[in-house]
Amino acid sequence: MMLRLQFNNRVALSSCNRPLGQKIRLEQFNSSTEKWLVMSDISYDSRGRETKIIDYDYRPDGKELLKQNRDLTYNATGALTQIKWGHGTIETFSEDLALRQSTHTTNTGGSTNKVILTTSDQPDGAIKKETMVGGCRS
Image (cartoon, rainbow, N blue to C red):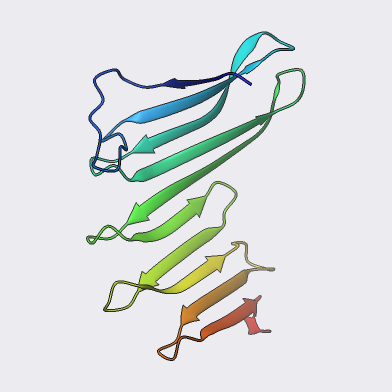
């Protein structure tokens, strides 16, 4: 399998070797079509955090089968607060005063079969899970 990474050759890197304010493209060579196919596009903000990710999947003949994108949002401390998926699902994250993730909520969108899953860390170390389907607890 041959992979190719494309980016601006003047890219600045964070201390974690992530590109600052850049877009990176990962490509894979398809031997049946003898063409390079885009596998992922990843955009980074000025702090080296991923802000948009697009993943691609292809049929054996090289035609695009699936494209999945997500946008990521962070708070002032740099913690991930939201992932918005292209198909409508929104994941939100919050943290406690010690900056540990305290809740993770997944909202699948839609008005009829909306599913919201919330997990939260309790002070005693237990993980509380709550699921709501269509506005009703299950």
